[in-house]
Image (cartoon, rainbow, N blue to C red; front, side, top):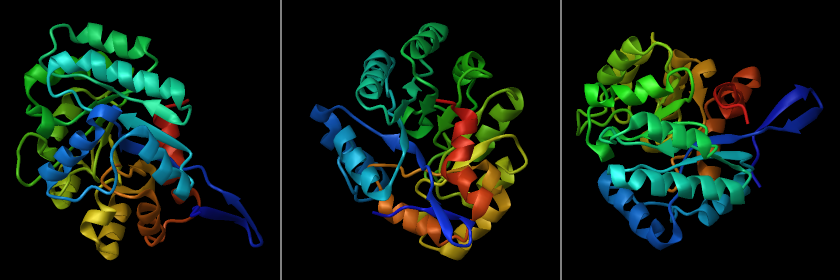
Length: 276
């Protein structure tokens, strides 16, 4: 089994907690179709079928401690079904920390957020490219208003094929909602990493490592991103079922992050945003 370790003393080691903050799960009857659909969208072969069993199989081999699990509602009608499913899986698997889904076209956003909280979920996940809305469209403002200061947001940011999730749009939202605790996925902007740092680097937000280390396959460039963002703002994420946990941790281990910085990336920053 692969574990990241830190040296407390010259001759002593302890096993580190590892929280995967970016993992997708789907009900068994649609998991294969949903996983293949994501693969088609990104023209990338998926490593796993995105169900809880395969997530735990991949993560247990790598020593993952906890998983932030989520899915995305592409229509308002899916919101309650998805959130109930995520809550159910969290009750079955204590390793899971659930994030709920909402959609900008929901009729009563406050009611949806209240339901997420009532279900015991700990945050909200959005994917503007899948849900087809601009991050800074006023239709999405009720989401940010309802969760600012209450629930953290994980949001897909960046894609050089679309404008929905461009980091410049995220920057506008962060300026408008300064109390919003936001994790901008994929080091701030999938396939637009430079633009992401230019737009978001000086703003209050966090980023996750998902679909960055494996997608870039360039350790030196990823090291430069880590240096610029700072380990106090980065969370480890796998983007399961797209990537394998063991391979993702091996990539992180090559980045030269050590000591308190590694603790922060692997679990500390996540725990500062979700205490459970």
